[in-house]
Image 1 (cartoon, rainbow, N blue to C red):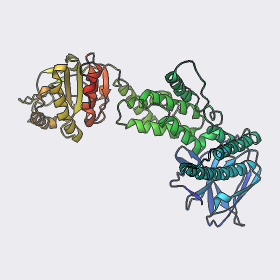
Image 2: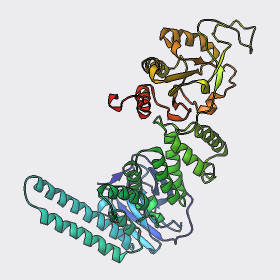
Image 3: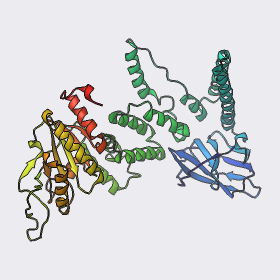
Image 4: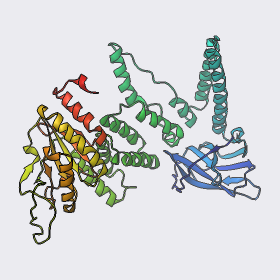
Length: 487
């Protein structure tokens, strides 16, 4: 059964001249395509390197062009079926014999490493089928432990034979990538050993493959990266950022792979709504965008915008001290004219009094950026008012900033009255003198920060549904309410 690609990204790549050329002939019975594509993996993408054209004899021929050693796929543009091919500079003239409907039975002439790879895949498939059958027998109550041990030992012996015969090959790197890590034993209890194993895995997980850049273009590497990031790394921003940096530094010499992972992660964490995820984005931007390491594929305009955004977000990360804001208070009971346009017939409400964020006294302060036309703001606002009423005696305070235009001030005032929102000061900045968006990276609303008495940011960017959870968690962390009272 042929493999099939759901997506094929066509991007003709420039190739290195570091490897030697050889001629590849594909005798593919049953294929009517006029040409086949030579491609390689770049993360999830399939990047096309060159083309194999059908000659007069009906065979597909690839010659003269030099490719770097490593894994490739030969793929039909018409139906996306493909098979693996290892470009090895030790090969000279290679012929692949196969039928389009049974590609797994292909044979390689003139390329021992390709034949060895195909034979190993066949062996591994049969081995896994046998093991699965034995496991079913074991589940049914039969004692098959000796058979399982024997088959496991046979697989190891086969792999060791390949390592001896092809010690410098890409195939051996694939086998090494599947070897279990050997964790050194340390003095200490079980918990200390587990902690040591966690850090040892992060530090040495890629040791088996890091010295073979051919492997970075394989689907096996993609699987290793996914496990490393999603399973083996603690899902906290600083830990995730460090693991991503480990991967990116390792693959930096392969621009396709480097670009794929950097762009993927930059885009993912630029838009993430998880608490403190912007910390990952800032660290990746600082290390690779600001320093120019991504200049080959990041345009200057995009680079400058990212640098500016990182500078803003850095000031509003968890652990930073919130910058002060001073703004007029929205007065929901009286109307005044603004100095910016005293002749206009104004219908919004504004007080001549100003209030600074750093003038708020409390054990915890919720800084709430919102506008009345925002659906999620309408959802979060009543929750905030309830929390401020419920925990007023514990020192919970608020500072709300309406980021809508002056045309929405009357709507905001009506919304505040409707929801008994007078418990919190409501600020507006029609002339935008405070530059609150730059100071707190207000990219969308609501933008919510929880500050301590010294205005240190404890939590940021929680959604409306998370507001109560994080306010109560912060109160508990401060010892202001019992932890066992939390749901």
